[in-house]
Length: 174
Image (tube, rainbow, N blue to C red; front, side, top):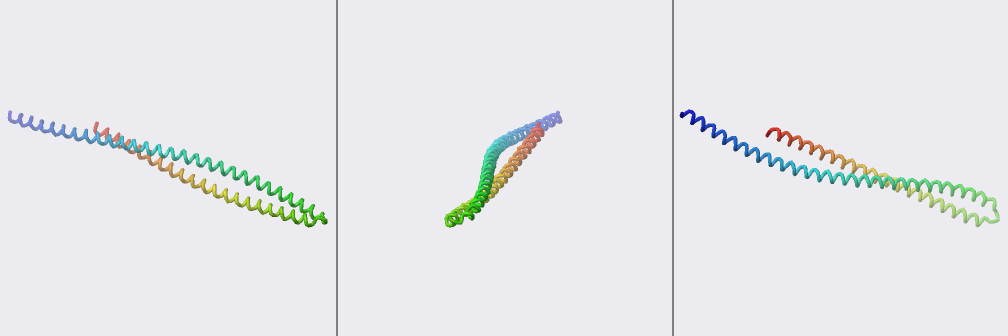
């Protein structure tokens, strides 16, 4: 009888220890669940921010591409206009050389055409510089987009790792 009482007492103590362990595990599991939910919420915010930044960068890149196309189109038009003006100037110079009686008028017109030609050359140079600047801006926007995509990928990896850890913890306590 004494042995049975001692065995019963031992079993009662073991049950009490197991119940305390179960309460501690339940509390810890609840805390881990709370941390997981906070992490999910934080990751969702980061993902949304990255998505918005990606959209904005995509929009900016599209605008830069459109601006670059417009500038390139304008440069092409100005180059064609310059060629036409050069041809016109050459024709007019030839005509002017045949007209010896109006030498003063011809020299004035040549000076005017040369001035227009210099202006057209300066304009072409300025537009070429603008195209180069837009290309640099486009490259910077592309680099930022790549960085944001890398940050989004890392956030997704973190979420996956947390899900796996939570699943592992759940299976350990099951």
